[in-house]
Amino acid sequence: MRKKHQSIPVEDEGLVVALYLGGSSSVEIAKQYNVTPPTVSCLLKKSGVPTRTRSELNRMRAPLDDHKLLRLNEEAMLSQREIATKLGVSQATIERALRRLGVQSKKGRGAPLEKNYFWNGGRTKDVDGYILVKAPDHPFADCRGYVREHRLVMEAKLGRYLEKNEVVHHRDGVHDNNDQDNLEVYSTNAEHLQDELTGRTPNYSPDGLQRMRENALQLNRRKSSSSQKE
Image (tube, rainbow, N blue to C red):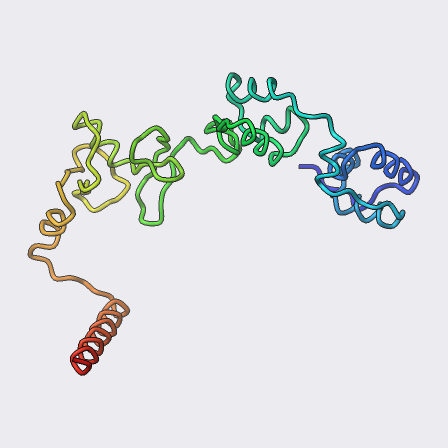
């Protein structure tokens, strides 16, 4: 990424004012001179030029071609951001136009999957160490379109979707080891915990024990208070 310049050359200040009065936005001018939009706004303010509101700027622009917008959304399957870049408007303008037309964006606000700058192959890891796989069409995908990989592996093995109450267990306790031989399925979490904890002494941390004591004390206080009222 090129480093932004600190200021606009003095000899070009008059041209910047003329461009702005001619309908160019401060963002467009900033890109042309490789400066930040606030730098352009500061120059305009110093020159006594009143800045336009967003609604005034939108009124100055030619209206969007709805047919072209729909083609880019429905046929080209572009994201709102990509459509905005092609039509030279803001992403918010595209979002409002699609809402006005009663049409949903086919690819959402950002670039889809592998076209997105942050795309990492559709695999990531959550805070508990489980691998997540991008599967937006899965009926139990989360709000970001991810499903835990061990559940997908078990579903492939069983030839069906897992029920929400079914639990997939890692035999070796390693959350990212999703080999089929390392996985087994329980019909409920209660069955899973019964097998998992049978014959084992819980290894609670000091903090965990302290929280359990505090919770027990609070529960006893509530019971005592309730019995006194009765």
